[in-house]
Image (cartoon, rainbow, N blue to C red; front, side, top):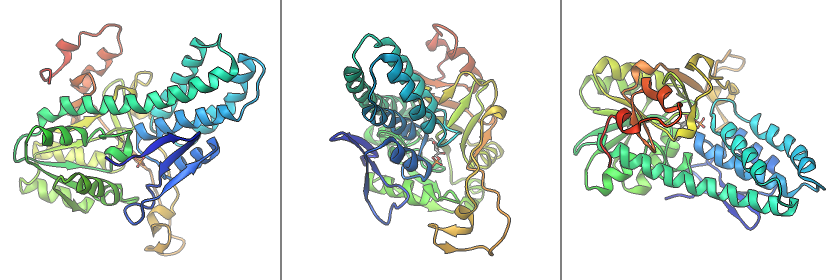
Length: 356
Ligand code: MRU
């Protein structure tokens, strides 16, 4: 499995995904500002991966602080939290990471500033390790949906590169393969940044999983011919009513799936669910720069100079299009997400599939 991000020698090493698959190079971040730049410029991307990057960014930022007390330390960390939160708005995982670290610091407020700095590094590393364990669990639940001989469609990249490892949408594929099932994957290229072509196709090929690349426009035609059995995608933020924000074009795939009677699944850690937001209409959608649409790789112009461009990076798929949300705790109907937010939910009643 490719390493997306790691803490090494007091620095954050991140794989520069903006250059893949042409170049495999790691960027060494020795300041939280470089981590922020990496998130904004998509050196690292994918909801869980940017949550991990944010936690490592906080740990890095903390090392730069000189403070005489807990309150002084926390006050000086505020601009670090703020800068990371301002990088990308749609994925809830950055906010989740910042809130987790705030609560962690509060629980350890009796410790010295020196010790708090060490503890933040350990907690950021734990967030990475935990993400890998969670994705593995998503894979074990989700593998049950992939049958021998199936063809699975995926959109964007919700693979290892988008997480600490295993991916969310790809985890069920990796586990189904381990369990001996043979299936094919179709990757939408995912305009405009081509995460499907550059990242998903690349990492599935590295894993030896048969993958076919298609343009985004092709999915409907293949569904009509009966060539796709199910779709699995990731999410950047899922609302309490089960509406799912994910890479632009996901809504189109979901509507096409509905039309053709193809189950559409979303694979996500519980940390991608925003229990504070009642509906997907309230999810902030990032608008990115026009050059992603007018240029390829930022250098080769493919549209006339001066043309008006819209470039929303995400869309929201209403819950009614989603067959199930596959989490580390089981697969649930989107309409039952609200139940999960209540204290002590009866998971065995809510799960739509048996324990792996
Ligand atoms: O703009 P990106 O590449 O960060 O968008 C990524 C996606 O939309 C993924 O599907 C999502 O973050 C889930 S990753 C497990």
